Image (cartoon, rainbow, N blue to C red; front, side):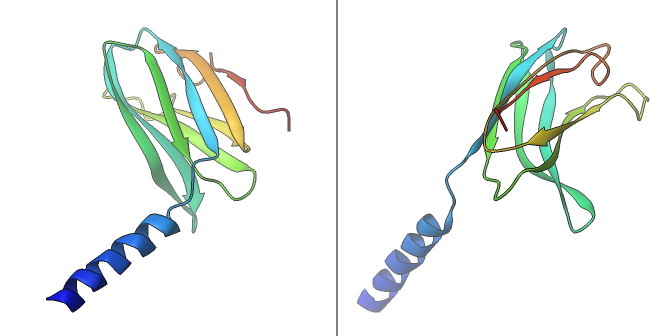
Length: 119
């Protein structure tokens, strides 16, 4: 029993130490958005993968964070049901620090204003 407890403590310690601290914060506001889900995405092995998400419910502001090793292209994806496969993803260049994205629901991609780190 003691060996099992020790193994569990070691496993938890290794897992906790292997998680990297966030170094990229993405926040902003989507005017007109009352309800929906936002995903922070990156390309991994030629596929888009979700690295963080937030459910918007009444407040159009959002904040997400992740760890990146080097500057890269990332995407802010708004899951919406409007039968329009376009105008739901904002592409931006992510570097360590803070990125602020301001946009509107009806022109999600085309009205985006992105302010980022000095680099």
